[in-house]
Image (tube, rainbow, N blue to C red; front, side, top):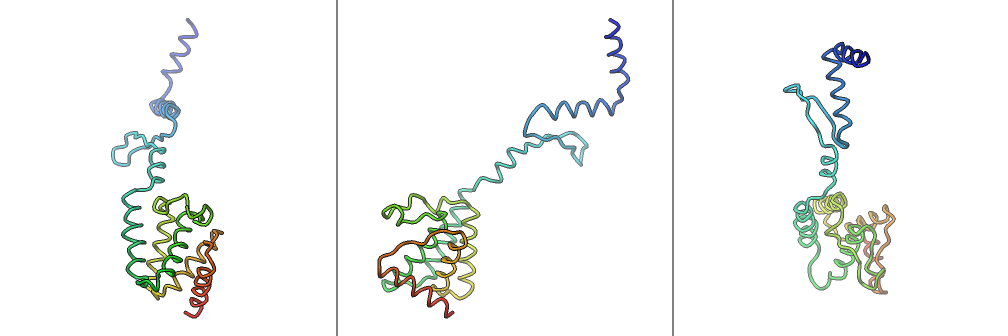
Length: 183
């Protein structure tokens, strides 16, 4: 009984500030991944769910990815690359370099013509980087050889391999790089 009286005296001796600190410490240990903060407006305690905020920032937006890929990268390339049968092989080589980057280095030639990945589903920052390159190209030279060189060097910087072509495809790819040096 004497010990109980000592405890109750100690509890009575705690100030209001001490009680608030004790409450904060107890609440801080209740839930992991949540943080207590004091509202600047009302001065009340508020909970912030840090885990939800962190995960929410890391998730890609499907609608935004669609817009970047179809209304951005793809549309700009279709609109500004040379059209016609004579330019088909050149366009395909440029698209291959674009797709290698968007697929983080996966080539069609690695799996007998099947990439095993889809560039439309890549990470959003990767798509944004590709979009920036295409926009800069459209706003600049619009020279397809220059775009090919930019994509080629981009894949080199990331240590991604390049597509393997037959003899005529290799010759066209080499010629495109050579022509890009002249611009």
